[in-house]
Amino acid sequence: MKCMMTGGSGFIGRSLYPQLKSLGHRVRCGLRHASTPAGMHSADFVDVGSIDAFTDWGRVLFDAEVVVHLAARAHVIRERNLDPLSEFRTVNVQGTLNLARQAADSGVCRFVFISSIGVNGSESVRPFTEVDVPAPQEPYAVSKMEAETGLFEIGKKTGMEVVVIRPPLVYGAGAPGNFGRLIKAVKSGIPLPFGAVHNQRTLVGIDNLTSLIACCIEHPSAANQVFLAGDAEDISTSDLLRLVGESLNRRARLIPVPVALMEAIGSAVGRRATVRKICGSLQIDISKAREVLGWEPPLSAVEGLKRAALEVRL
Image (cartoon, rainbow, N blue to C red; front, top):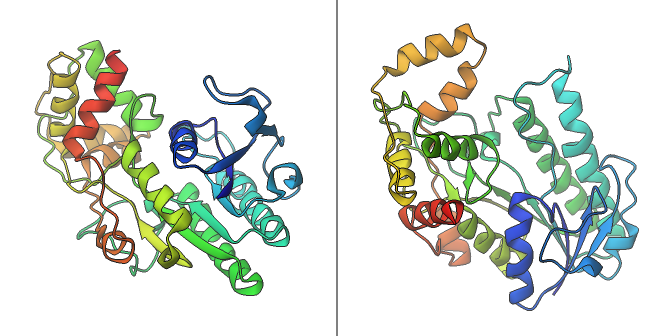
């Protein structure tokens, strides 16, 4: 299969690229800058510049059969722009739909879009499923939902198959966002106020996510479907930190601070949303991927977390 991939230099792309190559796929990547990630073939990477409504994808789309779109504007902790949604839309909506239109015009058969579980919502009272009504709470998630809607419209008009994957927090060595910060905090040995957090969260290890993406590239039943990604087991934030600490040979120093108190402090300093992401529950039902695709996460959550922490230690 001839695959065109965006985001090849990002956290997910750096793991997906070698996996697709090992499966025999020919991979060409469009990058927002010219540098090729270490250990990858420079001939497979093309500089396309900024990703927006005007990006020319011709040099990377020619003869591609499948597009895997990973690139996105994300992990903006403190948004300085007065209209953050417009910034997210430029890349995540306009940039995505521009790529999809050019892909369809180039004869691409399938477009695999990596979205976000945030499209379902920020917290769950029961495990999220693919049939839930979207309820995005943040600008990033809103932009991903709008991109999904636009992609399926393009698919209906052109016949190009669309596959949407919504992952939760993705963990692994070198992961950005909250997981990377938690790893650094455990390694530093500083006391962490999460000893009283008994939530339940579905995470997804990088190996499990790339396995699902690879499956969606070829599986006939993936066409025009949405799949939620996740590990097979849920885990609390406190147990996650303890597992990471064990794998790093460092005891996670957890202090049992009441969640309500952390939320109050978070609200006072403008970080309540971050506290909720760490302390709230967000569970995902991955049974659709199992039943429709016959897919199973290759690693358990415990195995994945231990592998991630070990790679960080090395």
